[in-house]
Image (cartoon, rainbow, N blue to C red; front, side, top):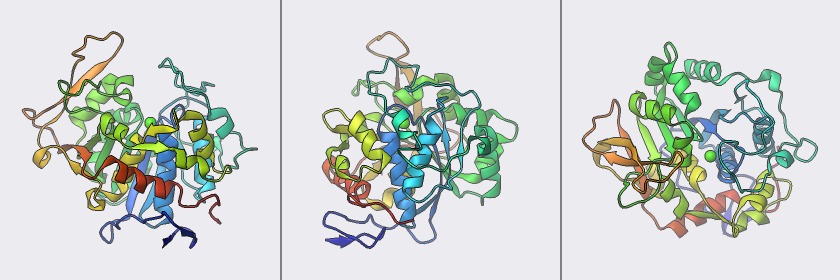
Length: 345
Ligand SMILES: [Ca+2]
């Protein structure tokens, strides 16, 4: 039994993660396709929870989908966790899509309910949002060198735009300590898993970012995230929390991979926390795209870890160090750490 540092309440299952080294409050920018699946919501909740515990500060959240509902939904989560002032960004090309239009989605739609301010209070003013390129440039310019962590839990379109912009590459080289990407499988032959949805949606952008990004990149492969299942317990948290509704709608058999949640967890707590380890030696090699060995139609692409390629900066991929159930229990304890209550802002 542990007293949660979040609200001084006692939760039988709550185990706070090992603290990162001192002076390492992670400054984070999250780039998300928050629209269709539940793990983006869990990941944004995780960033909020770890910020409340003093481990991180989310400098901004960028939506890389065009849906009009995406930012209000993100704002609802931030507002629930008492961080309504986290700046948000999205393209000006707004649509009324309620699911990612580039996939044939069979997932239930949740975004309209979550973005409904009458149901989930939110502090959001679209007139105050900036486009992703301007947003990234202003945030990075204002931070210390080598101090910003970017976690890409969606597509790489915005990051490629930043990288390709005048002065963008130098700004990244100076300010970004690490880019974490949810996606990319290191072994196409033994793992018949495509490069991953996030990387396939905008393959030219993905290719360019992986090739030219001038600071370290760490990949969380899809099959790693899939092994850590999250679900049933999140349904028991307060119904006032928007992620409760999302998990109710978009978990299959009440379980869904922790993909984006695990990426955010690593981006804040690093390897020191103990769940994960690097799968390649000394940061050598890099991810490379190859044709899908199954010859599958559509845009399916596979990837391999190619040790013969010398990247412009270290590239690493993550694998589980602890058992998937142990990690799942730790993530679940954090996501449910307010019990059926809510934070007092
Ligand atoms: Ca995502």
